[in-house]
Length: 154
Picture 1 (cartoon, rainbow, N blue to C red):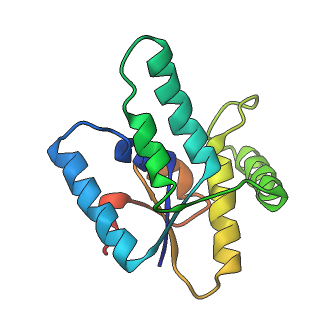
Picture 2: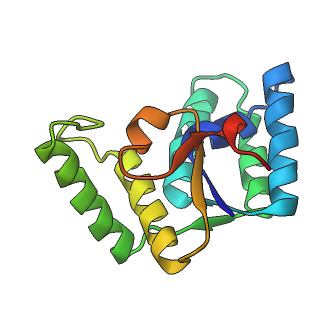
Picture 3: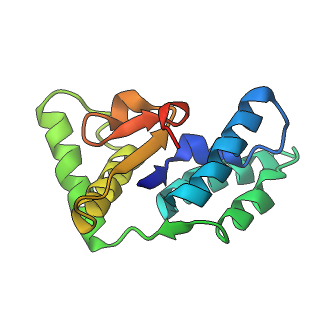
């Protein structure tokens, strides 16, 4: 199984606080690293990092940045290449034609880039289950196999 960590889960993994939910996520992530191939995307890094940097520039502590940097040693962050951009544009237009946009028409819509990355992975690894671990099933599941992280059995 290939598990694609989306921005919502990546952001939680970068949270330095200790709560029961975050501990469960950390334990699930550790099991995933042992039993699966785990990846994310540079667009997810961008979404999480910009939030952490904004927090820091507002004078608050952004201790999640080193955690995000350390995650690059554990999982691959896939680049957004031409194939993914083209797929994302196609998915974006399909969503609009079907009346189900996930963001405003002028937004870049990172969800569509995440969906395109998933489609590219699924095409490159036929026969391999590729699943997006998320907290945002509604937008992503229209075009991908997206599941709440806690519902992915490892």
